[in-house]
Length: 152
Image (cartoon, rainbow, N blue to C red; front, side, top):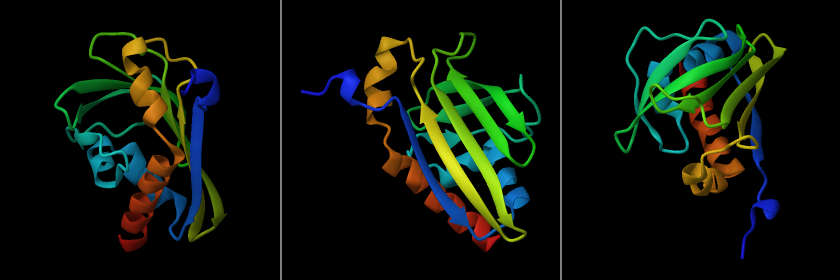
């Protein structure tokens, strides 16, 4: 039996990527590119022209199941940090957050941390999915992101 007390509500994965932070950040901050590296196999597509530029931005993403999410940007530092809270269109975010933190190692290497935080999630219909989001899934996103950033 698994109770919520035994399931971490914040999961993270990190790795060093052999690419500059600017290149990596562009792949994250352009929602149209996110489905290319999504290790959760949850993101299907996003319209172009939604590049994240500031806290308060909202970008729209279609999930693989066909539903649409408005993603409300709650943290932003160009080239270094971006985080958003997804919500159904027209609704307040229920409290889970996706965060990316980039730390330069040198001009051609960047330490990247991807975090999923559902510690404030209030929508009980999303709890099972939240519990199932693991550090391995986040690591898969990092691996795919690295493959693209190191190739381009």
